[in-house]
Image (tube, rainbow, N blue to C red):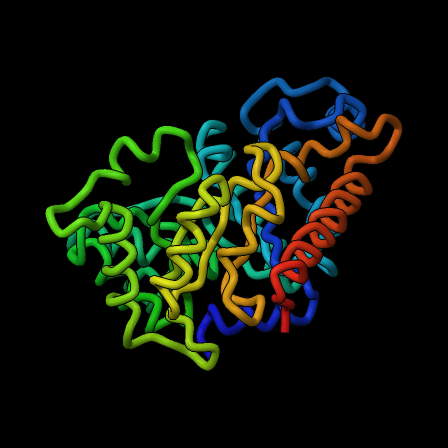
Length: 312
């Protein structure tokens, strides 16, 4: 059973193809919450990191029995310096301790030895004089495939050795993605279609019990037609689908990213869960986040049913 099998199993158990994005920053935290843990307010990076971590703990506690995974975006932690990176790792470790599958959204890549260092950090282990040690508590990392196989092989090798996985950028959800990703080859394929074909090829030897390889694809929910076409094009590739909620996509936009059995994809929501309390005056932020996650689950599942798909 590879990591995508484990992800599929947890989605099936909870009947919820949602990953909660912990893109947490101090601007998202309720003032009362900050005052309760830091009476003098946030006065340093260390204070900011502690507030973010404590907020994440409350969210994980509220979501872990209904949401199968979290995706922790490293940029929101890097900006708080070394203290932020400690909060990044502590957040992932805590989510794992609660039974959640953890994705490190780092979009790393390079070639050769440098790519191997990134792979060791996030989906492998770092060689040390006393043995190997895991740097970060991630099960899956996001990567950028645009350096070709030289930048992919170190990740696939680390995944094979450590039971981990990656999601490679294929068709991203941002409005300007087409500036590069929609450029056409002489054979008629777009750049993102060529990358999709490579991702399928790169994962061929790593397919698990569900038929999905350890190399997944990031496919934006904001491009539903392309998502449906890519699902047919990439039958052995699990999809990570950003763009739901704050970016405007709905369950109906996303249904085409799932296979005929209602499997093969997990949908990310970040701000819509993180900041759900802002639309629910007087409701504790963790309660509001849980309610939004339940609403999202219902939206996704009902949209899949309308297309004759149902999570197995």
